[in-house]
Image (cartoon, rainbow, N blue to C red):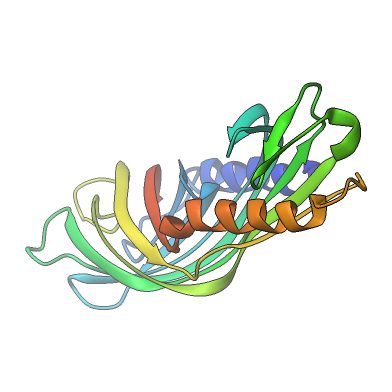
Length: 220
C-alpha cells in the first residue's frame, strides 16, 4: 500500500514544479484527480483544435471494517489500480466534452470474516466454530471500453489552472468472486459455493463500473 500511495506525492510535486519558470506552450497539461477509480493524475496533449488525448493512472488502498454482505459481516480490503487512454472531444469548443477510450483495471477486494455468533451461509445456519474463518476475493482485471462526458478543457487558452470533472461508465466484465472457509462442518462446502454465487450475482451490476472524478489541472 505504501509504495502505491508514495507515488502520489511525487506526481503532485511535479504538478507544482511545472508551474515555476515554465513557459506556457499551451500544448500540454497535467492534472491531479480523485474519484471512483481512486487517486491519480492525467497527462493531456492536444490532437486538434477541439480534440485532446489523455493518459492517466489511478490507485488507492483502503480498508473497511464489518461490512455486511449476504448477512455476513466482512472486513474488506479494497485495492484499486488502473491505467487509462482517452480522447476528449470538445464538441462546442468550450469546456464540455464527450470522452471515449480504454481503461485497464486491476481492482480487487479482499474479504475476511470471523463470525462470533450463528450465521446463515447458503441455505443453513452455522455456529462460529463450524465456520472458522471465511476468506475470499473479488477481482476486476480486464481492459474496459469507456464512454462518458465531462467539463473542463486543460488546453484552453484563457487559463493555466482549472478544475475538471468526468462522469462515465467503464464496460468491464462481471467481477470474479472466490470464497472459502476453514471450517469442516458437513455441508459447509456446498453452502460456501452458494454464498459465492450469491455475492457474484449481487456484484453483477458492477460490470457497468461508474466513473466519477474531479481534478485540478495545470497547463504548460
